[in-house]
Every structure is written in C-alpha cells, then in structure tokens.
Length: 87
Ligand SMILES: [Zn+2]
Ligand SMILES: [Zn+2]
Image 1 (cartoon, rainbow, N blue to C red):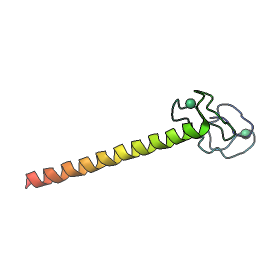
Image 2 (image 1 turned 45 degrees about the horizontal axis):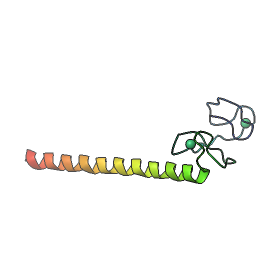
Image 3 (image 1 turned 120 degrees about the vertical axis):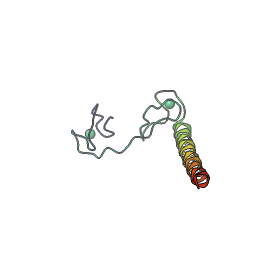
Image 4 (image 1 turned 135 degrees about the vertical axis):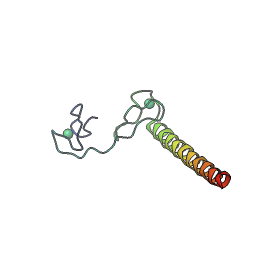
C-alpha cells in the first residue's frame, strides 16, 4: 500500500504516517491486479487503459458475487432436500 498523496512506501495502517491522508482501498487492475492510481491513465502492470482495467475488475467482482450467491442458493436447496428426506 502506497500513500496516494506523498507515495510513502509500504504503509500498513488506515492513514498515512507521513502526511495523515486517509488510505482508501486503491482500485486494482482486473487483468493483472496492479494498483491503479487515480492519476493513472494506463495500468502500470499490463498497459491496459485504466477504464478497461477498472471495468474488468468490477465485472470480476460481480462474477465472484454471483458465484457466491449461487453457491448460497445451492446450499439452501441442499438443506431443504435434506430436511425433506429426513422427515
Ligand atoms: Zn502520505
Ligand atoms: Zn493491469
């Protein structure tokens, strides 16, 4: 984690120890996972356009969410069947 204002390296807390800026989660590239600065135009890890990289990251996230949701539904169904069969 790097401070977006003064770019102090390897910060662990929620605030920068050098300038006190709040360290929000930095969005990462959906293709390579490199952190993308708000000032960046392209991903420094793979050269994709920032918009594409963030779009991809967002769709990755929704895919993961959808997968988790479906797993949850499957679990519930299983539980329901078990109860049904256990009667
Ligand atoms: Zn700082
Ligand atoms: Zn990238």
